[in-house]
Length: 544
Ligand code: ADP
Image (spheres, rainbow, N blue to C red):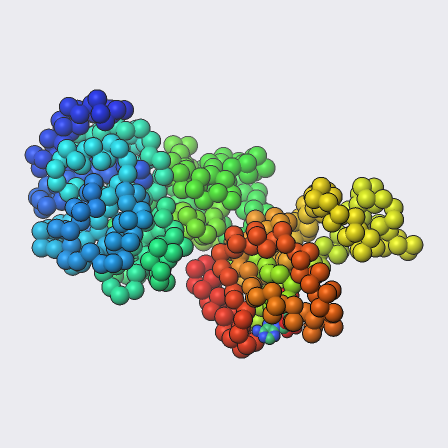
């Protein structure tokens, strides 16, 4: 079969070409087209025979449901039994955009699209070429990713061409896809919303818009159980595999570098974060930068293809963070690796912050009872300024010798008096102490990873110091000022005035703490607090 290519750079001026591509689809043929996530292979969603041709082209068994693409919100109504309030909220917040909503299907959806299920997955893409094409088709377009089954989803025209040339009559070339991994898929078909596939729209964003908790399906980070039918597109075992055999190396970069050093086979390659390849001196492919899941999402599928291109037969990969969009990255990568893991299970690092008297130490005590290892950042801060230490020396050079007591130890009051006298001095203090605190804390995390799966960094200045960057997830403990005041007056036998002074000296973190992933309101009894800690522990470990 000859495949016609339509290169579209201007949807306004190239209406004729879009109409010619659409004519193939209207004639019952499959056509590949770009979206903001990945390229799709579309067919008329209301024509079961046309949809069958998608499966033939992909070489894929017909047991995986497809997403139906539309261009206007209203077009969802004939496709489903009912558009729930939650669905309306998600549509208003995120459509057009990279989120797919599953609802009970109407009778016009053929079994080929729903894979025999009673539900249908609907999405309204934002990509201008996708929108112009679907509009020209005049029908809802069912489309999985435009690749041969079992290979990574294509994010570039060239990959679609490599897989589909000669197999389908038309491909629309719209350049590279922005986001790089497929849409978020959420089911609203049951009472509780369930995330089936993580993507650009995160669990946190979904919960905020829906106002209720979203359950993350077990299969998001685990293989689909044997014999269980995929309830959503993209859930099937080993759906995103390149030719190479990938293993995820859990743990720190140091653990990963050890693996790299001990694996000398020529066909081995390493999938790491940008910059890490410099210290590995092995064949490496990078998948975005370490703390930036969006860049990882954009790179992941290309990186998997590049591993094939360099002829890697075995690949060792870093284990990305599962935070935010990172959950989507891990979901794809773990499938590509067929859930092969090496090394000890990666520990979760929780950073806890909170103003003095909020109950931060009490929360850490609770978590310790649940098995967490606690790293006390205050203790580290004190340890780096012991007599003779380089940090103490540079503090004395910058703030004057009178910050030292006659025995050579730090006079904390004198340093505080100087360092907090102006913003500039506070910045100077931070620049001399924070990098060393971060380094020490990082070493402590690495040390504890081998023996513990849940590590807590207790840091009153978690965000100001930058220690939050070492954490997978963060929480702040909060309580009203008066409550905190009374608690620290009682705990430390302080006068009200001294307690007030201590609380007001912590302002910078208070504003930054809004960034925390979780907030623990400590306004009830100690028992209520303990129950909240258990809840948080369970939530975080279940996600990991
Ligand atoms: P932080 O570490 O944030 O300064 P702490 O955990 O030491 O705060 O708590 C301050 C004081 O308040 C402690 O004496 C603690 O036992 C007490 N406290 C904490 N939470 C509660 C609570 N919910 N009810 C009563 N007292 C509490």
